[in-house]
Length: 283
Image (tube, rainbow, N blue to C red; front, side, top):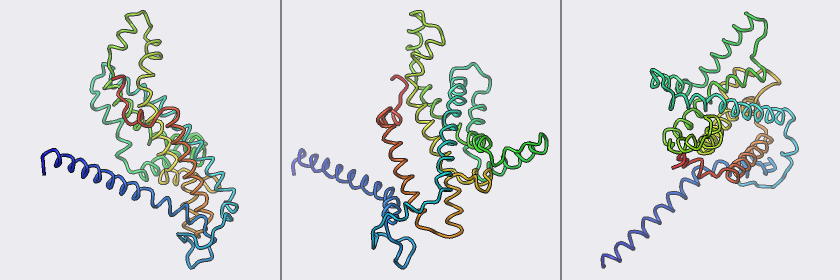
């Protein structure tokens, strides 16, 4: 075999390996979701509550989703959306201070702001529960089991995601863009708004998206900070599965999967997932 033929054969093998490995990863990640979606259409007359592939197709479980699950889903979306916005408002200025500020001990501060990621979520939830009870004893108003109490608990846990992504993109930011704007007479605020912010926006979007997903799917923190009748969607599903399995859980989970897919498609349309994953701060 000639050297050219060997190189061509090597490229073919590399391509086959890449396609095969990517296919395996996709199947590994998506197969559980396919099982949930498929089982949600089963009539439930089989020997098990969760049957895949469906033995008899039906949509009845989608009409038996409880109103409490819809309320919990709306609550989770609201908490996650507000948490994402607040985490950006807190995280971006913090990242600017860590990267561009003349602060003493920036390394220690950076470690401090990453600390919530190292603490188990169940410990965070228990800590906030005790803090809220202490506040209740002190001022007579306990934030536990309230919308604001849940947002604060989630905000503590997800803000490091925004700080991390914003710091990463700011560290790769080319300061010559800011210098050019200042040279042309732009004020510091106008430079930030018209130059810096658009260039670091993909990193901010990525952090906000991570915050939304982590907040929406959180169970340990929410489990401590909710109350009966006022639970987030993951906690509601957890309690439903703990008491008695019902196929309507599969149906509502399918709706959430579709909702998540639509969110990702919207992000791809508005921002571009490649921009989120490969943001380079203007380089």
